[in-house]
Length: 583
Image (tube, rainbow, N blue to C red; front, side, top):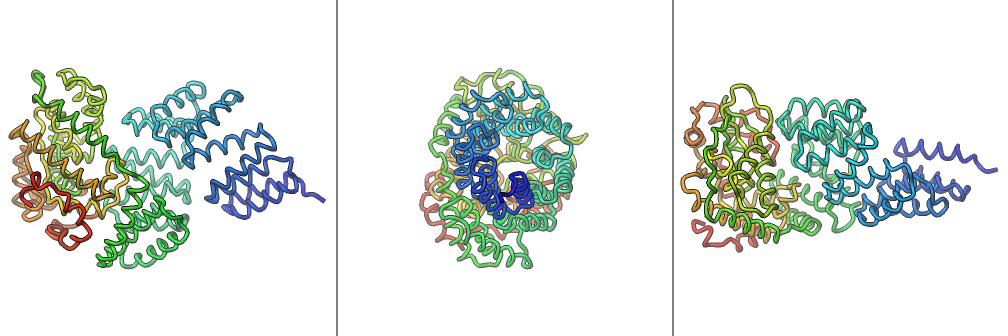
């Protein structure tokens, strides 16, 4: 006697909710055999496979469900969403377009369409879809959350904040919205709010991986490395094979936890397919663990393998960088436009810039130890303002400069009362020096300079998530980027003599007391003793330097490249001697 379909469906759903995905798949598969005309069993089997990290197999079952019943809305949605998650963007979008012509319930399809476009980095199109969705369904909390995330990526922080708040007003206990909002708050420098929001996400959903990941990240940024590692380990109990979690945990590993994390990394490697980005993360995790154990040979080997895999999966667009450099320097070939008088900027902007891993974070910590200085971290506003000008392809005018200035100032975070100056330490602003001086004639520009071989070693050993930093995973790309950096700086120094103040990393760490006094004078500040103890600065650090700047300043990283010279030989061979004559 056949089992009633509802009993089997309830059983499969209960197993999925309990995380018993293999059992749920078996239940649904057997039920589909017993009731071959009931398409929802085929859909449930696909759902169990997707939840069990077998999305490609799930696609086949969703298609089986639609062959049995082409109008199965759940199977349609699941198929489109799974195709998108697999990177089959065009296939997913074509399917959604067909379904939008047939179905009257457009909200779910539009949401999936926006998710697909977002996953494909087509965020402006994704936002337009969400605008259409929210015009018809203004109380769709999921759509508000997704639009907030997309707006944040587009540089619309104020609008993103409004969308997150509107989504939370509709779903006050939504852990995903809280986790996303926590990230925005941390990037805006609102660290106490960010921590509280991430903690609330975890309290409401203790087993929600994204919430735990956000909390661990914010704890680390705020200097609580012990708490951060504990949260990462808690997240790994739920997802022991998560390569990104393992990489982050490996960076914080202690002697008591290194073996445990290493065993998880090795176990994950055995399950991970060849040539994947996750496999790159796992080898990079092994490199960090080997480095912590003092085995530089093993670390260099794992780095070579992990970085090569990352570069294979995420190649760097060198041609775009070359075009942008030419367009930027051409824009300032005749200096700055006639701009007239700009009012003094208050608080006064201090731009700390240079190559990543050159000492920009340390310098910011020195300056922001002054009670009248706000350390704003790596602000993206000058980069975005400059990119708009470059994309427009028009000459730089006084009006354009004022627009850049207004955009930048309107985007700044709230600062404590009495702030005299603030530090923007976005390293890549070395490409934007012309734009900075055009918008802020009274800005202080401190340019960090460090031995490029030490910079390259630090980059090679650091895992960057930003697409703009993908050059660090390949030594040919890296040396091209560093040579281009010197070309930029030589041209800026020629165009704007006396406006760029160089800070040598080796001098700073060699005598932080004397150099911090010089830096204070350059910034127009009265020196205070706290500036020679930057490791005691309680400001949040949201960069790869978070661990180093919590330790007292030392010279141990100066000349460290010599111990890894063979591992860096491709990079060293590519350094242009005309650009680096003092090496």
